[in-house]
Each structure stands twice: as structure tokens, then as C-alpha cells.
Length: 307
Image (tube, rainbow, N blue to C red):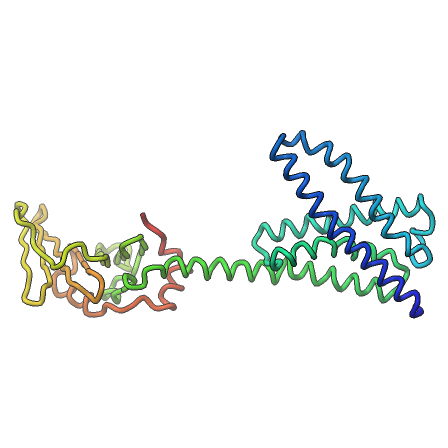
């Protein structure tokens, strides 16, 4: 390809890109407004006017390439070329919209507008009788497919994951976890707007063991036992301000609840099977929820949002 033909080809592809970069967003906005104002039926007149107008604009953009692109050598052939470029380019735009809808990052609003003309320029490049131009168009197409099908979805998933982590971490002062007692494991965790709850259950299916940890914002200046105690319930506040409640259960069992203040939060642990020593050991292992622990809970789907 000579220098003059190369410059003419570059001008040709630039005109196709510039024409469709201006036309496609305008046409899409017209379709949106028509559908919003009059429903799907109102888009028919816009399509009836817009498609021939787009073909005409493309044909005009192909006029300078009469000596470069054989299909642009005459008016009838140029119109056929315009229809083919419009069809192929629109398929590319629709693929881009589908990828964007799945969360693939296509840049800022300005970048997305600029990208609308690229599929048409790539389609037009395939009609240029030059191996290098077609290889370049094929490389652009391959890069777009790779980004839309591989890199983009992976990046979108990573952004969704980071947003979910940030949502769980909205109240870090409440995110405290105790090490699971022997023979038990975290079975469920729930992040609420003002609390963080964790349930511990036995690892073995044939064994019953349960404990619950709740971290919440304090609602009173200091822990106090209820003024009127329930029947079968004993409550006491120790010298350090911690509260111990024991509730008798049918059959001779009992449920023990320990509550204490921890920094800016109030922590409660309760169990029917651990007993007071086990609950105190659970409180002694209280620590901020680490990134690794949160990742594990999310990966195993053992954490969710509560209301």
C-alpha cells in the first residue's frame, strides 16, 4: 500500500468512526425518548427514519474511498457497503452494550461514546483490500472479545467482590469474632445496621453444641440487671461491669449469658452447652474480624446481611 493510499485509508476509517460516533448516540437517545414517551410502538417511526439516515451517512463517509475500497466505487455498491457496515457495526455495539450490562468496565461516559464508532470502523476495515489493515481490524476485534469475555467479567467480579466487602465493613467497630470453641465452628454470621451476630455449632452432625455471639452498639450507659427478675432467671453485675444471666430450662438444663463492654461495643455470648467457663474463654479470644476470616465466610456463604 502506497503512502497516498495509506493516508486515504486512514481518512476513510476515521470518517466512518467519526460519523457513527456522532450518529449512534443521537439515534439511541431518540429511540429512548420515543419509547419513554409513547411505548415500543413509538420507536417504529424513529427506526424508519434513522436507519436510512445512517446508511446515507455511511455512504457519504465512504465516498472519499472510491479508489481504495472496491465496494465504494459506485453509488449502488457504496449503498450496499454502507448496509453491511451498519449491520456488522451494530452487532458490535449490541455486544458492547451486553458486556456493559454485565458489569464490564468500558471507561467513562466520554470513552463509551467514543467507542460507539469503533465497531463500524472495524467493520469497514475488513472491506479494505489490504492484508495489514485487515490484520489490524482482526487484532482490535480479538482484543474486544478478550476484554468483553475474559478480562472484563473478571474485573467486574472483582469490583463486585470489593463492594460487598466494603458493605460488610461499614461498621468495623462491631466486627469482632471469637475463636470457635473446641469441637465447634462458625456456622453463620450476620451483619446488621447496628450489630454483628455469629452462631457456633458442633462440627459433628451427631453432637449438639451451640453458642451465639452478638456485638452491638450499647443502648445504656452501663450494664444493669432488669429491675424485676423473671421466674427462674438470676442476674448479677460484677465489679468490672460485666453482666451474668442464668436462665433455668425444662429438664434441669440452663442457659448462661455473659455481657460485657468491649471498646465501643457491647458483647454478648450465650449458650446452653458451653457453660460459663466456655463462654469466658470465647470472650477471651475476641478479636477484630480479619480479612482472611471475612474472605472465608464469604467464600463458604456463611455470612449475610441482616435487618
